[in-house]
Length: 249
Image 1 (cartoon, helix red, strand yellow):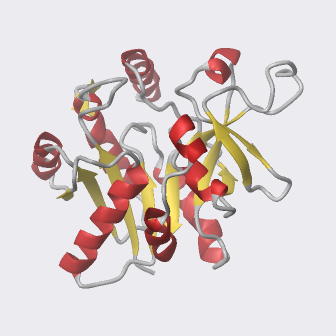
Image 2 (cartoon, rainbow, N blue to C red):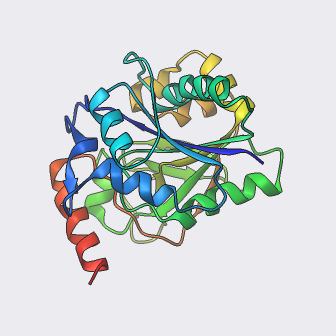
C-alpha cells in the first residue's frame, strides 16, 4: 500500500507563535518530528504541510520534503487534504492511507505510527484511527491543551473534549485518557472529511475529530505503549527538552 505521512505545521499558533521552529536540544521541533516519523518503515513518503516559507526552507535544509498550502485552514486535517491533492498530482500515484502527525509531537516514536496504522490494514471498514494515551496527573486532566477522550466498549471514541471527561469527581477510580495526534485516514475518508461542513462541537472544542463524530461516523482509538508530551506552550517545550535529554543519557 502507498502510505503518506503528512506533518501539518504553521508558525501562527495562537498559544505559542513560532512553535515549529522552537529549538529542543539545539534542533527545531519540526526537525525532531520529521526525523522520527521518517524512521517508520511502513511509510512510502513523509512530507511537511505548511503555509510558512521559513518551515519549508528548514525542511529542505535537512534533506526533507515540504508542500506549501493555503494559510486559511482552521483544521490540520483540512491542510493535509490540500497537501494530498498536490502530492498525488506531483507523484503520479494515489495514496491509500494518509497519516497525519501533528508538528507539535516531538517525542513521537516511529512504532507509534505502526500502532496506529495496523488496525486499518487489518480491517478495511476502519476509516480513521487516533492513538490513545494515559493521563497520569490531575493537572494534565484539568489542562485545556490536553484533549480528553472517552470510548465505547468496542474502542471507538464517544466524545473528545478540552474539559475533564468523563468526570472530575471520581478520577481515582476511572481511567483518564487523552488523544495523541497520530491520525491515519483512508484516502477516501480524508477527502470526505474535508467535504463536510465544520460542526458545532468541532468549533467549540477546536478538535478535528468532533466533525467525524457529529456526522455519526466512528473514530477507532488504539492504545499506545509509549508515553509522549505534546508542545502547546513554552512550559511544555521546557518539559519536553528535559524528558528528551534524560532519554539520551
